[in-house]
Length: 152
Image: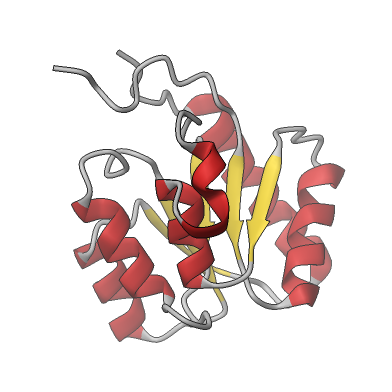
């Protein structure tokens, strides 16, 4: 049986975020921490799914690898983060891709539901840039350096 993650040498980060300020903050924090992985940004839940599954505007990605990690916001246009997470974790091609919920929500129900649907981590975005940079550094160190992805 062919494993959809085989030969995955992709170190890309998929950032799913609709707030332009949070996008810029995340990109600056990654750059400041010397995490030079390629980053692809999408701004709504449907675009995230199109990118992952090579549909819509991303049909040309048919043989592309999946990202090393997905940073997923909860509150998104078109399809919210929980719906996107559910679809990612139900599909055999993407269920092993780590998904980190990176959101401003601190609601217990969002945390519980994210983990119930298969999130690998739930991180609340700090408001202060220095703290946010530290969180992104730790996140990058773990998911991009220390964590070993599944490779056949």
